[in-house]
Length: 135
Image 1: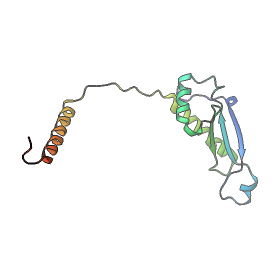
Image 2: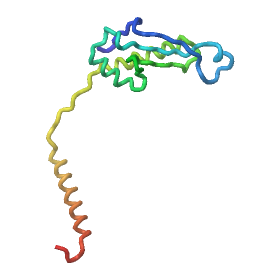
Image 3: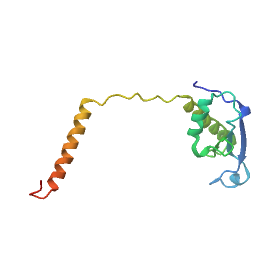
Image 4: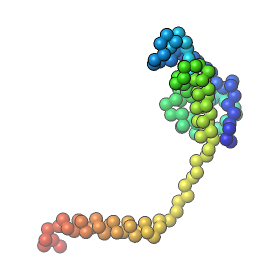
């Protein structure tokens, strides 16, 4: 499901003043873009992808179940808007990839031998700590 399309209806935009340097421009232009992806109302993504997306979102997941992404690196509102949209798209594409389930395998002969050798060494170290006439 690579290239999953996110409908614009499931996204709310808010624009706020950006922080940091920029002189007079930073004080009067709301160039930072805040994207809110309404995960609950989305009908295009399967439930399994939504669950993985919630896990991937981490601290960006709001109490209402929406994902909030803020972009403020650029001076232009349009560039910040594009950056936030791209970050959401990347997150959704990562969530679309189903994790591979690890198949259990028997321990290799070499790993069993290493384990036995380590046990012998631990036993020898403990024997070395015993008093001389102990038995």
